[in-house]
Image 1 (cartoon, rainbow, N blue to C red):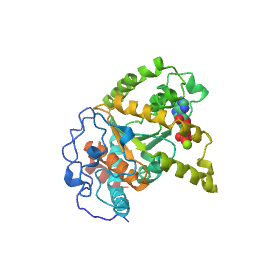
Image 2 (image 1 turned 180 degrees about the horizontal axis):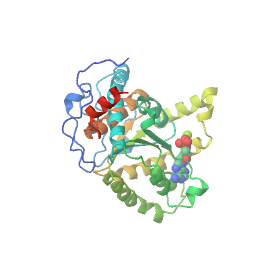
Image 3 (image 1 turned 45 degrees about the vertical axis):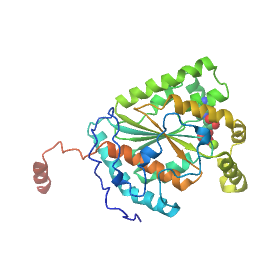
Image 4 (image 1 turned 90 degrees about the vertical axis):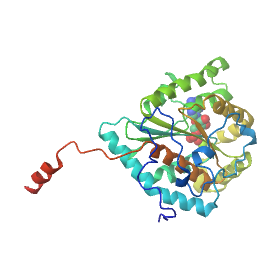
Length: 313
Ligand code: AMP
Ligand code: MG
C-alpha cells in the first residue's frame, strides 16, 4: 500500500528536536520533503501581513506534485505517523506529559471531517481523543467558553483533534453577535494566554485553518442536496452562514492576525483540492510528532529477571 518513494523518514525524529514542548519547533530538514519545494510547515505557516482575501484556495503552496503524487505521499506517511503516535502513547503510559493537539477550523464543507477520516484515521484510534464543537449545550452555556475546551484537551500520550474549537467563540460568536464586541475583543488575548498554558503543560498545538472558496463551498453544499447519502451532512443553517461569508472572512482574518503566536502558530491550508488539504495536514501532524523526538520508554523492570521468571512457568 504505502509506496516507499523516498528512503528517509522511518521512526526517528529530525534529530534537531529539543524534546521541550515549549521550545520553538525545529524546522524540518528539506531533505525529508523531496516533493515539497519548501517544507510544508513553512509553506503553510501564516506570514506577517497575511491577506486572507487574496489567498488562492485551489493552490498547492510548496508542493510540486499532482493529485496522484499527493495521495501516494499521504499513504507513504501512514507507517511513520502510526509509529510516532504509538511512541507518543507509550511515553504517556510511562509517565510522560506530552501530547499533540490538532485544531481544525474552517467554514462548512471545508473538509474537517475528511481530514479526521483520512489523516487522523491513519493512526490507532485508541490514541486519539477526538472532539467536535457544536452549538454549546445548556450545560456548557452556564460556564466560561473555555470550560468545555479545557475538558477536551488531550491527556498525555494522546493526539487530540478538535473539529472546530474555542475559535468559534471569536468566529460565529462575533459574526452572529452572540456576545458584544466588548466581550469578543478580549477573547483573542485570552485565547493566546490559554494556549500558552496548554503548550507549557506539554501539548504541541497544530492549528489549521482549512480555506475553501465561496464557489467550491456552493458546489459541495449542492452535492449534499443532490445525494441522499449526503443529506445528513446538510444543515439549512449552512446557507445562512454562507450568506454572511464576508463577515466570516473578516472574523477569520482577525483570528489569523491576533492569535498567530510563536508557540501556537496558525497554518492556512487551501481546501478546494481535498487531496492537497489531506496531504498538507498529514505533513503538519508528522512535523509536530517528529519534533518531539520520540523514543521508546525503557523497561521499568529487569528484563533478564522477567525472562527467567516467565521461562520457569
Ligand atoms: P458542524 O460542525 O457542521 O456540525 O456545525 C456545528 C455548528 O456549531 C457550527 O455552525 C458552529 O458555528 C456552531 N458552533 C460551534 N461552536 C459554537 C459556539 N461556541 N457558539 C455558537 N455556535 C457554535
Ligand atoms: Mg455542518
